[in-house]
Length: 212
Image (cartoon, rainbow, N blue to C red):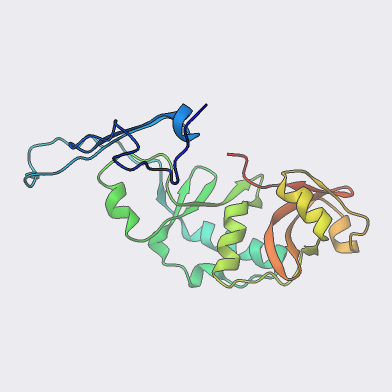
């Protein structure tokens, strides 16, 4: 019989592995969790800035160009009726990495200068064959920043929402004339609550929720 405790972390009387030194072993067969190890580390004195070496390679990120900023604003307005968002975003927080456009916190650059980072921030969109591919994270960034799309928005039912949140494509019975002319990216909402973005292909909405 596997012994269970009231909480995830056992008390001293419950677990003999809880040492005075601050070391704790979480046994999967005892606590019905992944097995892991916890250790308490204390810094006893300040570290001098000169006793370690910085090994930083060139960052793959570069500040976004004026041409790309204009291109983003034009496409977001044409596709979704969203105003020029880049006027409201600090310019030194928008970066390019190849065909990708990333938005990163302003203070993040101080950290990025101290270490090598291949990823960091929000992957906002991609530029593919001169077409803007807005990511799910980019769509949610727009909504949370109060840039509400004025077109290319589809309402889904509760049943369709359940399928969407499972990562499945959504079959749609009615698509307006503008959206049915070609494959388009659309915002998906349920009862006036935006849940993500999809791509209309034929009579289906391709699910673009992140897979990792």
